[in-house]
Each structure stands twice: as C-alpha cells, then as structure tokens.
Figure 1 (cartoon, rainbow, N blue to C red):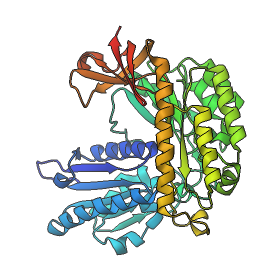
Figure 2: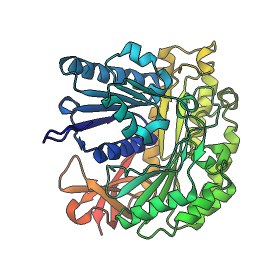
Figure 3: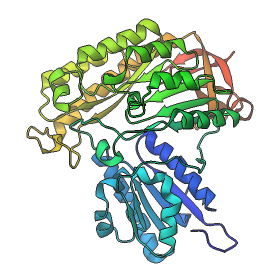
Figure 4: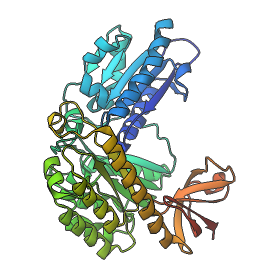
Length: 440
C-alpha cells in the first residue's frame, strides 16, 4: 500500500496470455492508480510487481516461474517489495504457490480482479492472502488504466461452461457470468465520450453472452451500435456452436461491426473434434464460414488450431491442413498440444512425442503463412479505411493502424496528427500479415 513518503510507490504489471488477461491487467492497473501507485515499465525498479498469468500452455506457465524467480531474489534483499501472482496459474495452483514461493504476498484468481484494492489492504495488515474461491463477479467502480487512447477492451462475459477435454479455462476462470446490458452500454457510452473510436467485446466464449440472463450477443450489438463516438465494434472469442444465423445477419446489418471474426476450429478431423468435445464437425464449421462470406464477402476469418492432440494420426492431421487451405484463413494462432493438469486429455494414452508435434506445427505454420500471403493480395491497389493507433515501432516516420478486417497497415505520417483518425490508405505492398501504403 502507498506510504506517507513523498515518493509515490511504483507498480509494474507483467501480462501473459490472451486478450482477457490484458483487459484484466488494465483494470488492476486502474485499481493501483486509484490507490496512489505510479505504473512503471521495469520490474526491477517497482515497489509492487504483479504477474498476471496464463496456464493454457505449459511454456507460458514455465515463463511465469522464470520471471517470478528474479523478483523473489529481489524481495529477499528488500522485504518491503510486494509480490502478487494473479490470473490463471494463481487460480490453478492456489495455496500450493505459497509452499513453492513463500515470498508471495498475494495469490489471486481471475474472478478476484475487481477486489485487488481490498486484497492489498489485507496484505498491508501483514496477511499473506490467497483469493481463489469461486465468487460472483461484481461490477468494478475503478476505471481501467487503458494501454491505448484509441481502442478499448470491454469484458461482457466471464468464465466458460464448455467442457473441452484439453482446456483448463473453465476450472481457472469459473462458470459463465454475463454482465448486464445496462452496465456494458454505460461503459461503452463513457468510452465514446472519452474519445475512443473502437471497442472490442471480450469473453472466453463470447457468443454465449446473455444465455444466463435472458438475452444474446446479437441483441447487445444492436444496443451498443448507437454509442456516440464509437466508430468500430469487434468481438472475440467465438465458438462455432454458438455462432448463429441471427448473429451473422446482425453483423452484416450493422455498419459499425467490423468484418473480422475469430472462430477457433482446433482440428479439421471429426473424430479428433469429438474427442476434444467441441460439439461440431468440420462440415458444420465450413458452413458457418460460407454463411459469413455470403453476407460479407470480404470478411476476414482468423482462428485457433491445435496439432498433435492425443491419438491424432497423420491422416487426421492432413484433414486439418485441408481445412486451412480450403477456408483461406487470414490469420491463425497455432499450437502444439500441451497436456494441462486436471484435464481429461492429459490422462489419455496415445500422447504424441514432441518431435512429431513440432514437425506438424512447422508444417501447418508454413501453410498458414502461404495462405495468409495469398489472402493479402486482395488488398493491393485498394483504398482501405484505417484507424491509426500508434507510431510504428520500426520507423518513427511511420504510423500503424488496422483495417476493418484487422490487417495491420503501415504508412508515412505523424502520429500526433493522426492518432485516433480514420484515414484512407492506398495499399501498395501486401505481406502475409500486414500491409503498407500511402495516405490518400
């Protein structure tokens, strides 16, 4: 907690994992600012270090422990440092973390993000706190400290009720809890008043929004579409089981909803999908994409896929390659299967060796890059509307923004004049995952 010293205490947040984690970190940074902390970039100069963790794959989890070890050594030299482990690793491990890393002051799961200030009060009173019990997530009165002044994350549903056999998310993020449309609309109207131009609605399974409170995502999109100042609306992450005809028609109807949809498919083989407990077939997945492109021909489709799932044969893997090529994805997040504690698939026989998994990962990545390069060619010579977000990290004379289809675009310009502006850019260079052009 901040002291009576004239120097404000400093805090550094290190975020691993998905967009949900990034949004959680923004809310926790807001809470820390409200407590009087100054947010800094360097962990080694911070009075409070918070790691917001991801456990969806083993390498992400191991990276957390590596970073944490460096701060433990600092704390042994300076016991006044406060160490916080938040997020999915914290929820998964709970009190076991204190036995493994007794220097931790606070261990807190994702459902407790909005309670950070109260939990730090207990730490200040000398308590070592573990907050991982399931709770009803309440609305947060603390404003997030957002990383962007142009685009904003807006959580609309927490948790996940699905039972995918490889996934640890339901056990670490809890059951689905939808925010009320009224609370979401209030937040988005405020963002418009503050000058934000784009919002991305977030949920682990966003298309399931509202089924616990008697509404749905299509209705919410219609409600927020009139928010003054908001020019673009996105949402992620979708599940093919819930990507309905009504949702597709609503997205095509509403001009502010961007033509980019992130719909994980995970495998192109029906038997693998059945053992994953995904609840759809590759044929039904293809039908969803066909419907999207019938109504929004230029729509960009991105997805997640897993190779090397237990028992996956070479023939089944080739089915995934076939789907990648047939759909023509604009981008794909690819991963080799990683057994997660407590999941059904981690206990199965038929685990593939690392060499096989890495071979398949490299093969699919080569195809992904080739398909994305091909998809990018459609932009050449076109005039694209781009929302400018920041200066290019590679060239200070360039700015970078995104098309409605979520392609990164680089062009010459001054960020002070262009940040937050919707500009037209003539595309003259197309790479696999980004474009370059000239301001029109």
